[in-house]
Length: 211
Image (cartoon, rainbow, N blue to C red; front, side, top):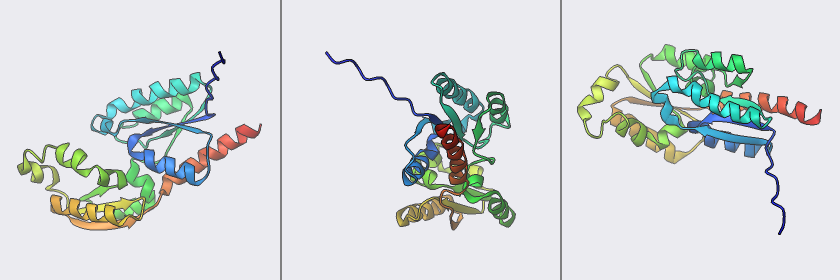
């Protein structure tokens, strides 16, 4: 009987929201990075952001027990600084910014969006794909459409910050704007600040791999 092969542990671990999984995997593949493991936390926690730090901490513990370098694929994401306090204690970096809209668009561009129209509802590729599940059904608008003005009465525009140039997703985003009764705007960002943050982390890992 042959001996079982030992499990090979990647030298680096990225802990991310499931909303970023596709973009992170695509970026790693594009750059031929095979030394990353990616672990996800459900995007549903954005409805209870106070639970995000503890979920992240569980995976940080796993990574450190394996001797992995850890990077967190979250912005603050509504934790009110709780995530940053945790990461400071653990000496772990994260994607800079308050939320994915900011790090995809870039802080300066996002500030411009806010200045142009404060009442803007933002979508990313992930949110476009899962709009009906997360927004329509998630807010109960399929059952109680009369709640639409309660949730979106102060919004004027839907802005789709796109990571891909996908005509089908653009059509879906336009349809989403129509469902919410909002004006529609499209802005292509690509990987934006996510790609820059991952590249910075990769440079740190690359240095450690050759030492």
